[in-house]
Amino acid sequence: MPGLAANQQYNEQPDSSGQKGIWLSDTVKPEFPSSIKNLNRPSNKPYLLFIKDNQEVDDETRNKTAEQMRDSLNQKKETGLTLSEYLIFQRDYTQRNKQHPEDKYITWLLDSELASSLVLGAFWLSDGRQVGVVSYVSGPHSDRGCRSSAVLPIF
Image (cartoon, rainbow, N blue to C red):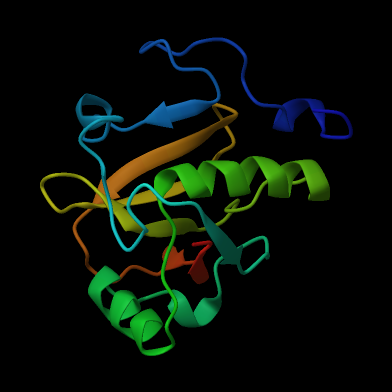
C-alpha cells in the first residue's frame, strides 16, 4: 500500500492455513465464513453504515462485556460491526491514514458471532502483518472495546 511503512504492509505470503493478509484463530477458522452469524442488519437489502472513525476503540467501551456494550449501543440506537464491515473499515482506514487501526486494542465485532455464540474480535497483528480475527466469551477485558456504528437501510 503506497505510503505505508514496509513493516506495516499486509503480508502477501499465505500463512499455514493459506490465508493472506488475515489470520483466523483456531475457533474461527472452521466456521469461516459460512457459519458466522451477522446480527442487526437488513436481510437482502442495501444499507448505509456510519462508523466512528478513530484509530483505537474508545476508552469507555473497554472493560465491558459484549452484552453490556450491546445494551449500551442499543439504548443509543447504535450497533457494533460485522466482520465484513470491519475488514472494509480496516483497509480503508489504513489507506487513508497510513497506519492500522487496532494497534493496541481488540475490537469486539458485536454484530458477528459464531454458531456457539462466541463474539468475534479483530485487531492488527503486527508480527504477522495481518488482521487477526479471534472469538471470545463475552467477559470484560482491558484490551477489548467496540466501535459504534449506525445502520440505515436504503429502502
